[in-house]
Amino acid sequence: MALDSLRSDREFRKVRQHGVPLRDPLFTLRITEYRPRHGEVWRPRSIIGIVVPKKTLKLAVQRNRARRRVREALRTLPGGLPPCRAILMPNPAVLDVPFPELQAALRRALDRAPGRIKAAKAGAGGSRGGKAGGGRRGSGQASAEGGNPRAAAPVPAPMDSRELSVEISGVPRTDQEKA
Image (cartoon, rainbow, N blue to C red):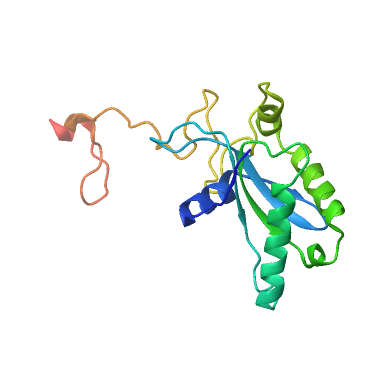
């Protein structure tokens, strides 16, 4: 399976929003299933962005070395990679761990991945990964029919002008005063 890299900020945001985090002492992997973008041809592949912040590894030499080790471990992983989009954030321990242990940790993390990602590799269907009940934002609950939790409340029917019972001053009017 081909190993491509996440490129645009939009792709990284999508994985951050919808991905399932898998933590290991060597790295954190945030993974979603592979879906082609609008107009893109269906080519199942692994698209992985490797992010090594300066906060984790101070020196550029160490960041680059960690990135190269992880990329090579992914590329030569026994059994290949499932079709997915993922962000991998290595920890400093990646620099010191033996290469076979790094590959074993990556394989364990990918085996813990949610349903469809593993099932796509095995060739069977499965449940969808991600959080139940929606994304990060929005505190509203979805309706029983599975509607949009942020959808506006139903709009009431228009009122007849005779039904208005409040004058501008705020004092209620009676039906006799309206006539």
